[in-house]
Image (cartoon, rainbow, N blue to C red; front, side):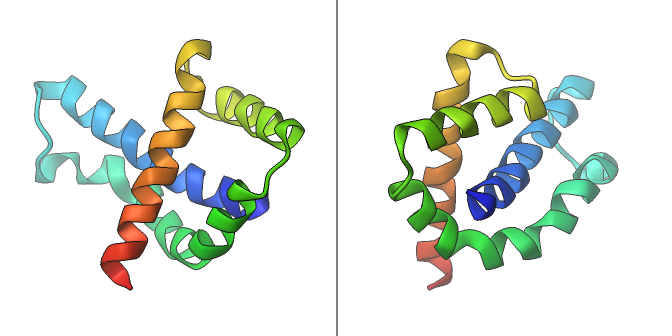
Length: 102
């Protein structure tokens, strides 16, 4: 699930950056750019990992998905009841982005 983690780390970091930017003044604009530097540096690896990540996720065992849920919970401090929703949303974002690029 290494590729899935790379992909999720980028997508969830972008989401965290958007949330942080909106917390400042309710909008995202150029002054929030520094908040996006970390996720943007992860983007090339996430794009490269994307196709393999989707296969890994589709073929994951229940135990691997549980491990992934625990990893996301610990890395991104997401509430327990929202972790699986965030993972599914991040995977959907990756699928949609992949379709746009292909």
